[in-house]
Image (tube, rainbow, N blue to C red):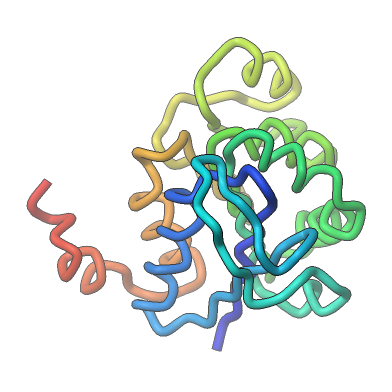
Length: 184
């Protein structure tokens, strides 16, 4: 059974975070919400979210780490040394995966130094594209390069989550059809 760590911090974008948790759990994949600070955080739009756990060394036991965006959420994730160290380790392990959406591909992945030479997408804008100047920046809704999956922002949270399910080796079609994605 695969295990996913959905990271959160004060200021995380709730659609990007909770959509991933919802889809993973519908797929039968263990998905823990892990905070980099306190168990209760306040999201980018002032919604209180209670994490399952606070980050510790067990983060290295997960198969995938997912980083929602939001500001200052992405900055707060990037400020956690254990998370950055673990992302660096995951980036070198073909059996581990990293998902990042919105501001996190630019802010968190670049802080970890793992964006260089990778096909990466993020929230559009010159600031993020400049931060990702050492990556191959794309405008795809969801981009996959090896074990790193990136996406654009709140509106792409569902296709991002479905792709993460597939990357872990599960079929997302039944889940997406059940959520009426096929009607869009």
